[in-house]
Image (cartoon, rainbow, N blue to C red; front, side, top):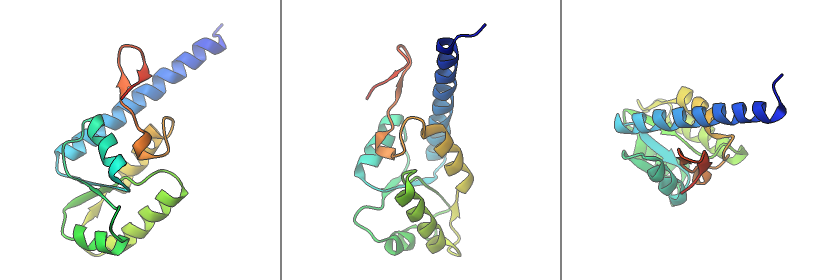
Length: 139
């Protein structure tokens, strides 16, 4: 009969696997030229530590309208604002500003990443790489 401890361990492994898959997806999108949009510079740093090498643009210092104008004409973007209420509101606002600019916004990947990352952090700057040896997070 499974114990609570075993069930908890299995759940933790599943969450970690989902997190690793999310990171792999994000790295692949970045390598393929998808521009990742985040809220601030700390988010940029966290994503660089996760292995992203492609363009990451922070909203900080710009209005949503200015950022939308900067992004117009980019083939593909992934809006990776925080998964809290404010981040969701900013995401909807930027999507509406990008509508009709010819820029493809990857809504589906944002939903997948939210599911993969939310167990660890609801804010992008709180994401930390998983240490493969100890199954703990480290930076």
